[in-house]
Length: 85
Image (cartoon, rainbow, N blue to C red; front, side, top):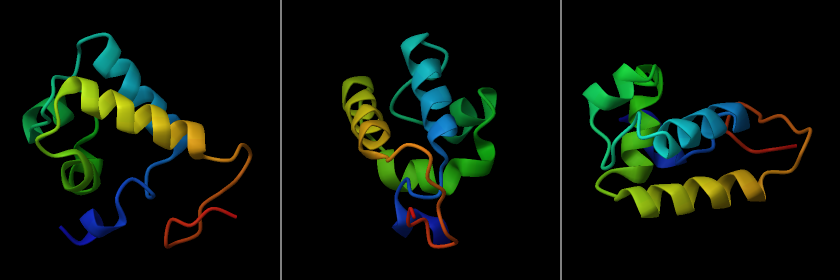
């Protein structure tokens, strides 16, 4: 889990919104499992998502994702370390 230490910085805002939509539509159950993430196409983000959101229930995951999305500046891009500029 090399990417787990970076939290959710490696995910784009669009990916976070898509993930939140899957949760709202009950297509992705919480707490996350590898199988559930794969079902909605997020297997490539498994390390980051499990590292940051493992064992959180639906309400907690929604709260984290909403906060992360809200805190991201608009029209920014992340560098290789996940920092926005």
